[in-house]
Amino acid sequence: MVETSDTARLRLLYDLGRTFAAHIELDDLLPLITSKCREALDAEGVSVLLLDAEKDELYFPYVAEEKQEVAKRLVGLRFPADRGIAGAAMQSGRSIRVDDAQSDLRFYGGVDRRTGATTRALLAVPLVSAHGKIGVLQAVNRRRGGSFSDADLEFLESLAGSVAVAIDNARLYSRVKESEERLRTQVGALRRDLARRDRFGEIIGTSAPMGEVFRLMESAASSPIAVAIEGETGTGKELVARGIHRASSRAEGPFLAINCAAVPETLLESELFGHRRGAFTGAVQDHRGLFEAAAGGTVLLDEIGEMPLAMQAKLLRVIQEGEVVPLGDTRPRKIDVRVISATNRDLAAEIAAHRFREDLYYRLAAFPIRIPALRERREDIPLLADHFLAEAAERHKKWIRGIDSAALERITRFEWPGNVRELSNEMERAVALSRNDETVGVEQLSPKLRGPASEAAPAPGAARSPSVEPAAEAATQPLRQARAAFETRFIIEALRRHSGNVSQTARTLGISRVMLQKKMKAFGLR
Image (cartoon, rainbow, N blue to C red; front, side, top):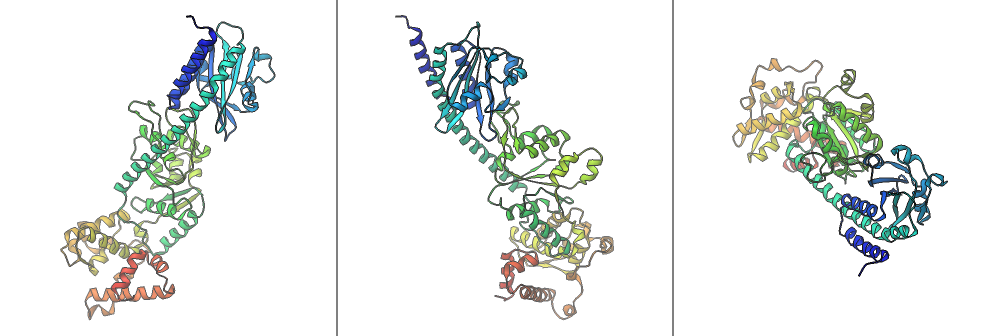
């Protein structure tokens, strides 16, 4: 029995509906929809125009077109959602058939001008899902000339419901998949971050330079302003960035850091903005970049001064537009992140040398925070040394009595080119060389500190640490008791100034609340 054309189309509708429902990847579904509809209608081109509700624009995510150059120009093209015959169909919610588009007052010629094509006959059917209008299914020009028929329009209308449902399902699947990819990227970044994070977990310092840093951090945390953290290697720039994040309204969101100097230029764009499957050799699956993975949180661009100029231009566009386009994709994606940058370079000099974009600098460095070098805050060195010593002793399962006065003097007077990180490593080494229940002396210090004290004189104008000044009691009692007595008096006075408030006192002393409570218990102050 020979099927009638109506029966054949009904069977085709049924088969297409089942086929569309079986595809949950939007990138697979859209080519299938457009190619099958183009074949069924014998059309030159079929496209799905999707609605960007936020911008109120229609765009072409994929086009099946007889002329490949026309298809390439259409993909990614956008126009206002109330323009053209497609816009009229979506706004009214009714299908439209036009036999001579050029003479139709609703026709929007901007698309033809961009593509070089000529639209003659046209079908436009609105796509409506359970969530409302999502776009338009459009067919353009019969291959052998002439107009589309009413039957063609009915066929496209009958198919539109299945197409809308399939697109809705694919979008839902895409959101779930994106969420999974974002979590995977976050977990990977956090694991890498834990592996490389400095061993200290809090910022320590009571000096005037560090007091200024804390003041600026508080201001930065209460504002969404772009922060650029400047300072030498090892001064704790990432620690300051984390502190700002934790004190900000984004504290519940992720904090993801990337070292721009450690990632090859060829991979940096993918790491930051993501890529689509097949974007380059080895891209076997979609990958969410840090800007998407850190949604609602903060991204730290460490060593921003090392970023290549080509990437600087792309980063500037992302910051200006508030959206990223992954490698291999044409659709921009909105991002919601705070960007903090850090550098050990003089960016003003880099700008003068044409190695850093001036426009990007002013986007990133609206609120600069300079972290002082360790030699600029020598009064913090004893506190830091004690802190690192205690941490190292705990890791090595040793009881270390402390640091003797001669060793502490050399530690305080040293220039520390590697700053806090170098001091931390020095204390780790000293503990490893010390025996249990022993005091760290000069002999446990590295050769660079064991040289004559005069070789490590303080920088001009640097304050001598009060911790190394000789005490009157030193001649009449053991050093350990003298230090404990001094520390007890010091803590009592600090508690008195803050009316017994442990949190405020700990912040002033540059130690954690837990550490202060331990000291108070040890000294019988609670």
